[in-house]
Length: 244
Image (cartoon, rainbow, N blue to C red):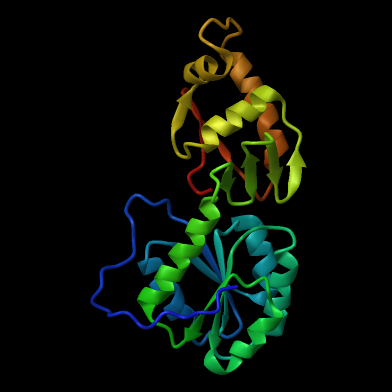
């Protein structure tokens, strides 16, 4: 848990957006809607997709949208219900969580180790976007570069184990190699011919249907109604979605 707060930075500094960065999703769980609209606008202005929901609707939105970051807005009223929701959620997923709190409520955060960072209200917009960027960078990378992390999907490059929401996906060797190749280059379209060459080898005579069969089996093992990772590009091939 981060316990330091950076000082306000001049509003004249440039935006912390990166035109090459995939548009990550930020979900705000709002205890009070007094500041939510302004908060959401500033996050969108920073280059992120952002939605705010009440605590009662949060779990469903998290399952359906798979946000890259969750912000609990406790800036006007400390909402223990929202915090307990996050406590239970973090037992299942690795989504980072930031709390927006009033200075007088800082002591309450000590009971919630699941909070990855916080910012004090009223906040500086540059500091807010900096903290968001920092948390998202931590999730997208690992210190030892031995894993590929795409939201709740983890590919361990050392053990060759794949997990989704912490649950192991039992993949064959070819399925694992397909997933590793595509997840390593999200957004890139791989033709069936390229996949055949890279996974099966240039002298394989099985034909394009082999790729389709393996891809269908792979998707059945890592995808469900809440998570779609691989898209079919009609008449061309496949790609790993950039949203993850």
